[in-house]
Length: 304
Ligand code: ATP
Image (tube, rainbow, N blue to C red; front, side, top):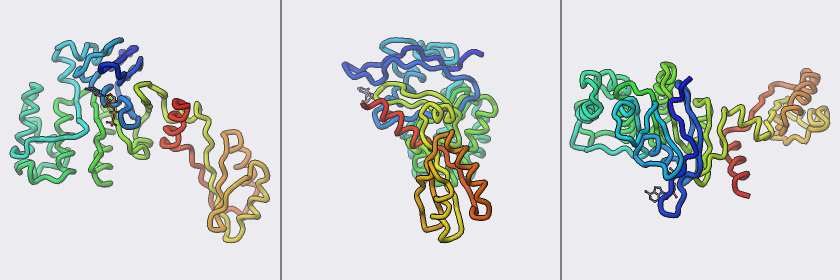
């Protein structure tokens, strides 16, 4: 399969500062990818490289088969971008802004009504943007990025300022896009949110790509312990810990919940023992390491 994005040994220097250092990865059609990193790690620079807004100092960047900084317009039309801070002319209406961007992309202006409906702005379409809430401006930004049914969507911190309901709607739209084959790159600091919605995670630190894989792959590489939470009847926690033996170094919460940190092999043994504890146990949850914990792990490895 031809990669939608192919970045090979890309380095971007600003003077002596290496914003991106020797990064390589390829993105396939239909993937939803989280781009994760601390402030100044190089995420926006990577997005700018894919958009063709900056050229790599070394290495190469190909997007939809073209050099994005090469001046070709075909690939650009199939790219959608939501910048980190969306700002529109507040004197224009939502419809006028989308019509403007549709013309820029040589897309039919008639198509914007469906987009306004999709992002829930149909009623506010003819109001000036100055009267929009932050969430409405963010929705308009997303509608702008969706013009022309893009094959590659680059969304920089897209859910900033959205309330939980809007975030869910936002991720529904992202899900629909990826279902129809679009590749979506999401950069965000809200890792818990990305965890359930992305298949692949790229972790960037000080310009380096320090991890690249599915969350499960990263969990395997990191070998971080999972948490097993066992609920028992009130006052029975100590009896449970006694039954678990080693590695039952569990922590007790409120006298009726015990939490164990276990490696994958210890986990199976612990669950086997728990099954043997019969009526003592009321509930069991296995919580794998979160994206937050994986992120912290890979950054620790990077910074000795
Ligand atoms: P944030 O999460 O804060 O948005 P980021 O991961 O997107 O950060 P970048 O914006 O890519 O980080 O910046 C990476 C590094 O490159 C930073 O040290 C930044 O100061 C530097 N940098 C980015 N753009 C320029 C520029 N045009 N000129 C000089 N330095 C720049």
